[in-house]
Image (tube, rainbow, N blue to C red):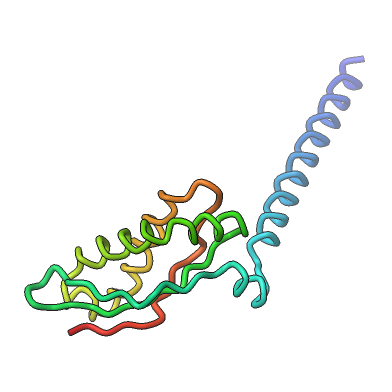
Length: 140
């Protein structure tokens, strides 16, 4: 009777571990599939900002920039379109924290895009910003 009980416990444990592993990998796969957007979907869920001119942190320098903001769903896009003035204010305040040297450095634009993605995600209630890309960039 003792051997039967041990074998039964081992079979139950192996089954639980197997089911748990299958669940984990199925969840990981489905979330990866949700993230992959086609080019058409990306265009549908993106917003281009106006061209924005703002002063930089370094004296007598300014930047002329434009961004493409990709969102994860249609509700997030609608919310972002309604919050245009808040988006512009977030962009201007973020850029104003950079110097000319910061922006023209190797990682300057990437840092700007990352900061804007984080700041815009904090604003949104109905979705997330997938990425922010600089589509026009001039520093004087």
